[in-house]
Length: 153
Image 1 (cartoon, rainbow, N blue to C red):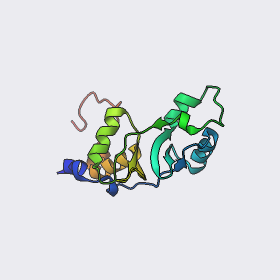
Image 2 (image 1 turned 60 degrees about the horizontal axis):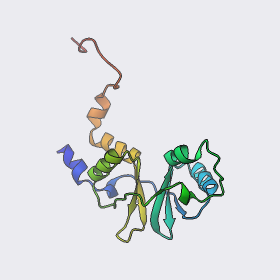
Image 3 (image 1 turned 180 degrees about the horizontal axis):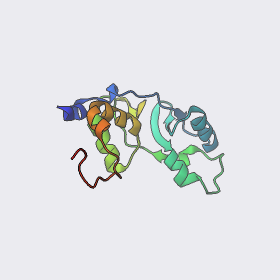
């Protein structure tokens, strides 16, 4: 019964925050300032309304930090271009599969025209799972915790 929640629940039913969308051609410096100001871990890069890329904290750490990067360069040179996307009518299970298969933490959501429609993040998925399986989450022991004998024996 609960597994149907994952396979049948639509992304539209998750509690999603509006994404931070930035126009293609914006400088890396401006993008980083906006991310910091808005307290966002990623931004969707758009050309008009179409999602053409995503720039994440991971992109910053792997492509910008510690390198002699001119902050006046455009974010287009450092973003992940043509990211895989989902729609708000795809299932939570599809989002989980895509995140697991590719190591994504953020997946842009688009409408039928390819326009930015939102962003699903790993925290949205974990919140959904915690609500779907409250007893399992509440009773889960930390993964590093080991017991020599059963509790209450």
